[in-house]
Image (cartoon, rainbow, N blue to C red; front, side, top):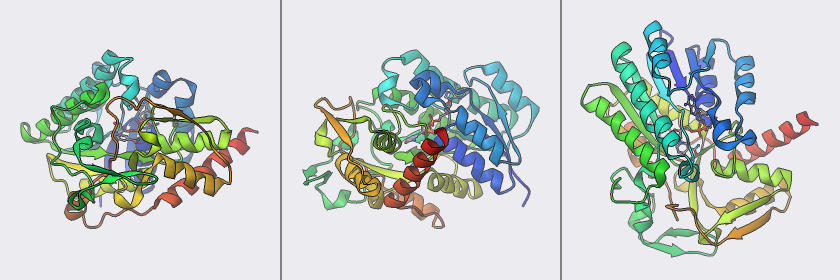
Length: 355
Ligand SMILES: NC(=O)c1ccc[n+]([C@@H]2O[C@H](COP(=O)([O-])OP(=O)(O)OC[C@H]3O[C@@H](n4cnc5c(N)ncnc54)[C@H](O)[C@@H]3O)[C@@H](O)[C@H]2O)c1
């Protein structure tokens, strides 16, 4: 097979860097765009430079472009200079809560820059397979309308028909998204439109919680990564509302990129897929705290804030039925305990290296 020429945006971030390492290892040529804007959003703990240094040392065919995706001329210049077979768009302002403080910047990064990329692909690489990393926040708080039952350590769906979680038929309008969810919905709908209206080979993945050791986790984004960091540093973990019984499904970034690879090998333009850890990798905050305590042997100091995050899901599990039926070779390889063990070992290694 001829190696692909792949563009990955947000290449210093969690999912983008996983893609860079994965596709480079398979012999593909990867160009990454990242301007370390995560540091601007979240301050020093969000700095991704360490991950760029790691990638440069670990890869063979990776080149990095320090471009701000809001700079349309630079984005078009890059596309004008080469043909891409695959465009994987992972760059974003990724936080729900942060977006309310920076509405214009959030919209420019999440929505406007996505349209620049789609249009650049249409003009210069119209055959490219274009993948947008979207989010389950496109459903806003509509998933909270599902009847729930309260169990000792978590909320769960009360109706057995909902057991596998939220599928792609959930509505995306008439719901409270947070500005982040709204800007990502704009990008999601635009990406689908470029497939339907212009015929581009676009796929959209609506992710639940994606995680992994290369996440620069902060309180406002990266639930498990932040929890592990707090556990290892002895800081205090704050639970926001719902008694800590809110449920998330978690997927390792490696498993997420494997789904992207399956789509690239057999694209189904204009499709949207929910992508997460599914029922097996679902966990509440209380359960996650207990599991991290069990693995590390350390007690996590916690604080409870009565007010939940605005528009937050009470119980969100990605229904993976459509993804698995379209791509039967894809499956979740890493369970929750495995994910946490890997993240805890990586944190411990980083702390040792810093000494
Ligand atoms: N991690 C998750 O749990 C999760 C869940 C749902 C959806 N997603 C989506 O997946 C995508 C990737 O998420 P992630 O967790 O890897 O995020 P991340 O913050 O780790 O990575 C995003 C990267 O984009 C870069 N970036 C931001 N604005 C930029 C700009 N204007 N120009 C160039 N680079 C810019 C940042 O510096 C960062 O390195 C995002 O679209 C996010 O919304 C992630």
